[in-house]
Length: 116
Image (cartoon, rainbow, N blue to C red; front, side, top):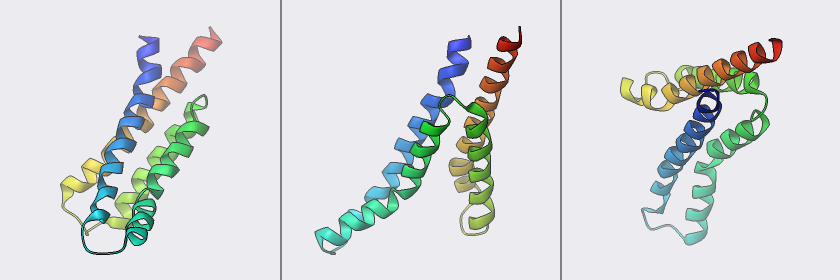
């Protein structure tokens, strides 16, 4: 069970990053130049790069991930409130909260195991 709790938030974060990457492919519609499409694609992937950096930094420091993923979820809700349907907030911010909670549980469990 300890390995499951260890790997679950990390795997969910990777799946979430891949899910967000799907939204970047919408830049290939239209009749812009290849270079503008490539630049747009990279710009759309900036949140993914941020999440990858957070995941790398917090791989062994779960408390950092718990804080940062929760802050990102709150930031998304506050910054984009009223622009999208309610389901969009659950789809984007929900997994961030979930992984933040799972990283917190993993951190607490590891801390408790080290104390024993």
